[in-house]
Length: 263
Ligand SMILES: [Fe+2]
Ligand SMILES: [Fe+2]
Image 1 (cartoon, rainbow, N blue to C red):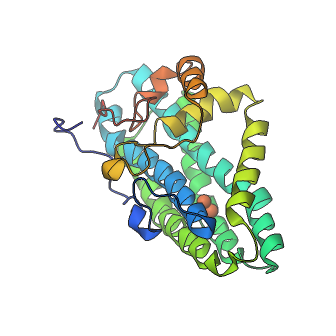
Image 2 (tube, protein in one colour):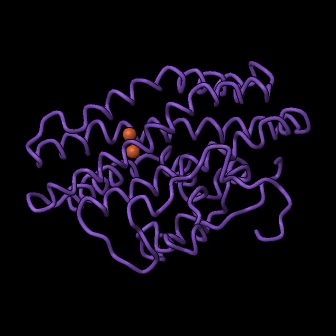
């Protein structure tokens, strides 16, 4: 990636720095800090994903073929489905468990309120890209950027605030194992999701294609925590299904930066 002259995807919306949770390469965090770090990782995947849409919207609209535009709309649309799915998992599984284990019923309420705050904007973005990918309207890059800039400031604020909330749970580390709660709930949700071919082919690849193993000197080189055989299977079986969509993504299926074709 060092030689590229094109704008990279660490903007316009800023990634969350590992220093926020104290994560450094080669160290193992525990408890609330480990959970906060994992959340940063996932949130950065979401931020890189939308940055790639933002960076390419105008050029795809003005220089792309009909196929480019539809593929790009599919990529951008899947990003919004991923955001919905992340927040639904938090609302139905992770947050209730945290409340139960800490014994503080309203502990995640501010975050739940923040989810509601960006829902309308996210739905608007998703509805527009649905129309584009179904060929009902022509892609308008400026309109898409406006829709992103309408929702992202609120969403980005939430992505940062939620990490702060998780870090504040350090005070409960001696009372409950938040890391275990998080891993168990995410594990259960993933096992369920993997039974759905829509998840395997349309959502999972987006996660792989938006995680950057080279970020901050490889601080998160070991993510996702999966055996190499599983990683290989995902790349060969699922990332290939809609490879035309993922060409617009910030990273390739090995989780290393790729050049954005329309940036
Ligand atoms: Fe989150
Ligand atoms: Fe959230």
